[in-house]
Image 1 (cartoon, rainbow, N blue to C red):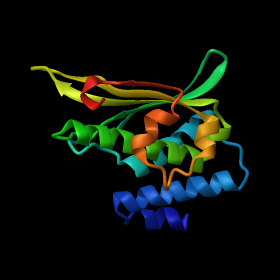
Image 2 (cartoon, rainbow, N blue to C red; image 1 turned 30 degrees about the vertical axis):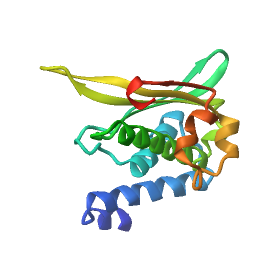
Image 3 (cartoon, rainbow, N blue to C red; image 1 turned 180 degrees about the vertical axis):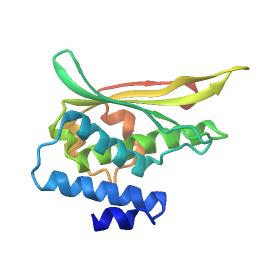
Length: 173
């Protein structure tokens, strides 16, 4: 109760960190949590790593769900890319985002909860009166790969080499 009262006077970031800390304590205590709660915890961790909004002010994380295809469990993650004036900047940002996502998945034990991660990075493009999200990068990474690699030292340019499947928009190839 004291922490809740103290949290009211904190900044949004501090409240967010307190909430995440509370969730970590809940998980570490061995308490059973629902699959929905697991995804909420992961959403918060990904938001902390990637940022809640893009550099253009758009929500960053747009899709986060569990899925099963071909008899394999998957975690589907969709994010909006930060804007960049160059193709090289877009490519670097997309690959760096994937490394951050995979690091969070490993750190939070998702490599043992799924068979693969399916990650999509999207660019918001304006075509006159409306904005559309167009895929920049889509890839599939096996849980074994997530588990095996040290994501803190991994070179983001190697992302296409470790993926089971990769699709890249021509602008970042």
